[in-house]
Amino acid sequence: MVIKNLNSEKVSWSEVEKLTKILSEKITSLPQEFSSISTISRGGLVPARLLADHLGLDIILVDQKKISSDSIFVDDIYDSGNTFKKIINKVDSPSNFIYATLFARRGKKYPKQLIYAKKTSDNSYIVYPWDKLEYKRLAKYSM
Image (tube, rainbow, N blue to C red; front, side, top):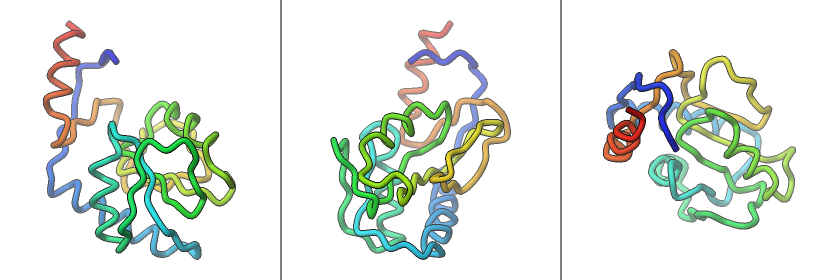
C-alpha cells in the first residue's frame, strides 16, 4: 500500500474510545442480536476488541473464511469498499449482515449493511494510535 495523499489526520485514544461508544450505542439500538465479532487482523483488531467490551461479547473471530450474519464485522474505516467486497462474499446471509466501522470516508457510496461512528472530514489518511509506525513507513515510500 502506498499513501498517495500525504495529508493525515491523527486520531487520539480518547477519540477512538468516544467513537467506539457511539458505535456500540448504534449497534445496541438494532433489533438484531449478535453472538460474536468478526474482523481482520490489519485495521480491525483493536476496534473489535474495544467494541467487544462495550457490547459484552467474548468471542472475536479473526481472518475467518466464513462469517455468520450473527457476527458483527468490525473494521477501522470504510474507505475504498474493497474490504467490504471481500468480506460480504464470506457471509452466510448478506442481507442480515452488519459491517461496523469507526470512520466512513466522506463522499463514498455506502452499503446498507454499514454502521459507522463518524464520517471523515476529507480524504486525509487516518492515523490511529496503533498504526503510527505503519503510517511513517508508508509515508517514507511515498516520497
